Image (cartoon, rainbow, N blue to C red; front, side):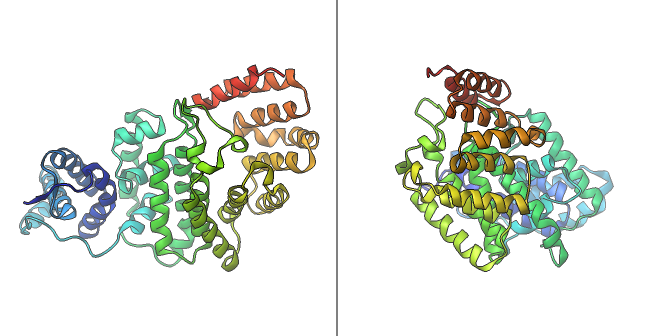
Length: 407
């Protein structure tokens, strides 16, 4: 097989091709579990072979052929599937399978978010099947042991097999029933990449990039779904600030102190256009409202130009349609900017019971508000308390740095 040198790095292509190859095999043979294993082995083989020999002339066909041959081997070694293996082995395998003419990404995404799976399994399976990430890469991205990821993926595939799920594009009520789960999984992946919940890295760019890529694919198939558009806009408008969120030494830079000249104007422009169109044509949902809030932040040339009254009004709306601890907490921050830190502190006290799931963040907000009213000693204590309860080292360093600042 001829190879083309000078093409993009093989590893940069594998994640793009992984869902296409898995979709072809699963559509042909129906066994998601075995097909996924075969594709993963084909990806590993490609990572080794292509880095030495260069890209094949037909990378997709190379992967399909390699994975198909591995699938035959898997079936050959399973006595319970002997007859299926024999029947399949009689088929002639061309040296290079043609590239698929059907995009199976959407069907794969909805299968990975099957309601029989736990949220953690949905995330792991989505990253592996559609993101093309290996078990080790997912483990590093999510800061969990590789054995834990392997167990989640194994259990997820077993649950899909036991449920009798059929690989096909969702139809009818399945879109409406499963779309919120799909969006939530993509949202979780993006958030974990944008602000890692633990470890010494603030960002996991591979996760945010995968979340945006997958959401773009979903939006391309469902352009009229307001919440799909809203989620894509939210990701773009949030990720636009990433270049300014860290100092060269890795220190966290809060939104108000960021150099806005470093924000991605291209991402902001696209995100604003998406959310503007969506709000004009669809009933607002939680992701659309969050995207609108992000747009207000991003369109302010300076922190002091931010329209906090509009942001507070949007949080009031969000609290009506999708209440939750983080919505309450973020709304209190907006209250502080509109009505002053004293009013916000009283609301923080009133909401203390419902904010427990927000982890260290209520203490960090309280510390900031105490700082604003001049109670430096109390602020210092709450900064330290918040630092003790986060596993993110950049956040720890930032909070401890705030605690040690002199009045």
